[in-house]
Amino acid sequence: MPALVVAGAQWGDEGKGKLVDYLAMRARIVARYQGGHNAGHTVVINDEKFILHLIPSGILHEGKLCVIGNGVVIDPACLIEEMDVLIARGVPIGDNLVISQNAHLIMPYHMALEAAGESLMGAKKIGTTGRGIGPAYVDKMARCGIRMADILNPPLFRERLRVNVEKANRLLACLYGAPGFDPDEVFDRYLGYAKRLERYAGNAGEVIDRALREGQNVLIEGAQGTLLDIDHGTYPYVTSSSASAGGACTGLGIGPAMITKAMGVIKAYTTRVGGGPFPTELDDELGEQLRRRGGEYGATTGRPRRCGWLDIVSLTHSVRVNGFGGFALTKLDILDGLDVIKVCTAYMLDGKITREFPADAAALERCRPVYEELAGWKESTAGVRRWEDLPENARIYVGWIEERLGIGADMIATGQRRDELIVKRENFQP
Ligand code: IMP
Image 1 (tube, protein in one colour):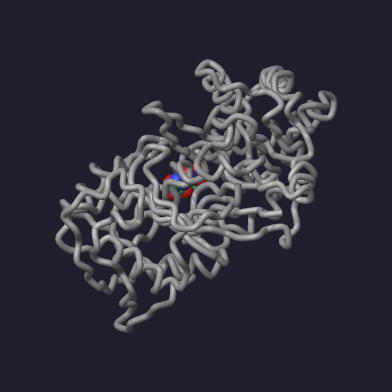
Image 2 (cartoon, rainbow, N blue to C red):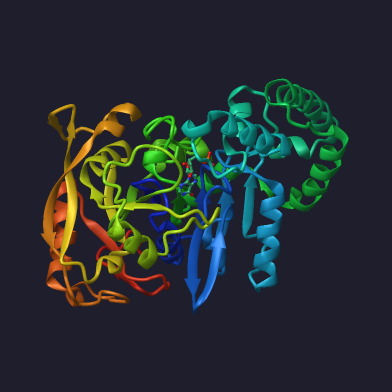
């Protein structure tokens, strides 16, 4: 009963979508356990680009069951739009999608509250994706959220919505001087969404548990990355969910013993979107070059991503937090042609060398990277499909990361297309 969790080891955008797409071929179920449409997973098939925000990328394969778990927050309008775009492009959506009845919904006032809160923070703002993710999780934890099951029960939904809208309207008016919402309009709109989504609502945990007991492969897809995890990331510059592998159990409703392995996804360099500390950030021409070559612009917001060197200190933290048993290295080809590749192996913090990832974002802000230098390679790695065909220095780079992190590389991505991949170790047997 192999259940593999694929989670980002950095600040998201590691290229998980492409790997999940490959692994999905060998899985029966592909499931999402946290986050919402703040995520953007890009998959390129036969030169056709698909960007998925909520639906697991397994949907692009025939015969796969895609599950949106209870830990995900769903904007129903976005989900329906995504479904329609896929259907228009010939991807069928029917019995191949299950949405947890317990998943919480993003409501219009969540986006308004987030926008107002962020503008109040000024320079200290988190730089969220503006999708209402944080406020939706706030309501969940405050036990007043609205779940999939609730919109399928109109009298209960109307009552809960009335209280929530009143609270949100008062907050928006008093704290931010912002306009409020009409509960009847929101009710009618969400009832429309309920009609469209009703057939997909189910018990996600039960579906996954059954598949695992039948010996089927289950692929569990993380969104964002460990350094954006609400508990283990660079708080408060994080997202509001458990992006690391631990979130898979609570976000799907399966037991920890069901998870066979967690695989980390590591980009060959580092990127971050939004605010917060980033010790290896490159503010120079090289950073710009990585952004250009790597197409480092947010799949959801289009914002330019901040770019920098690989950071072994934060990755060591990620390996521990997730218990990664292996990793996939992505975008190796973006480093082609560099004379020297720097990798941060320690931080200088307040005059002392440390190899520990500080718990406090303010301390991380003061950290200066201590680099080791590795020789680059001149040859192109773009599209390479066999380990032996990589330039020697690229193999040395991968081996060096394996040694530093104490785990092996399972896969190496060498381009955007589905087949531009080196598979060193299969995680699922066919
Ligand atoms: P939120 O998830 O919209 O609340 O944003 C919180 C932080 O997480 C911001 O810095 C975002 O830029 C970042 N973030 C959220 N989703 C992603 C993602 O999919 N990739 C990269 N960064 C993300």
